[in-house]
Length: 112
Image 1 (tube, rainbow, N blue to C red):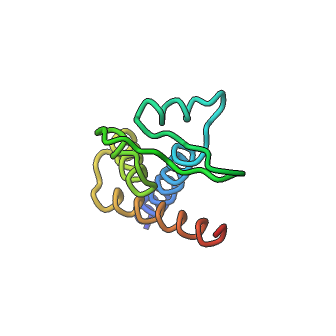
Image 2: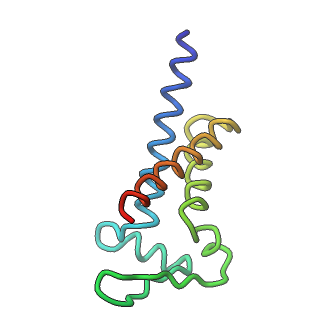
């Protein structure tokens, strides 16, 4: 029983961390524009097209493709978190990706 509770806590902990870090990387510039500089270094640039309207210019570089969409970023963020803090767990990895994508879809549908 205790082991099952720990698995649920791990799932929630890693899923929320994955979502939060992914959201920051994809949609915020960060303090002092640190995240924006990181995205530009990866090959992803925000291009202003009007009042509060942006699109992203994504280069053909390897890292730009790895960080080109929310699902892609959540894949790598969750893998890194799980490897560092839990050892590799295939099911937990995909559960974190799914939860992060689910939360993203809820926010996108709510905003749009």
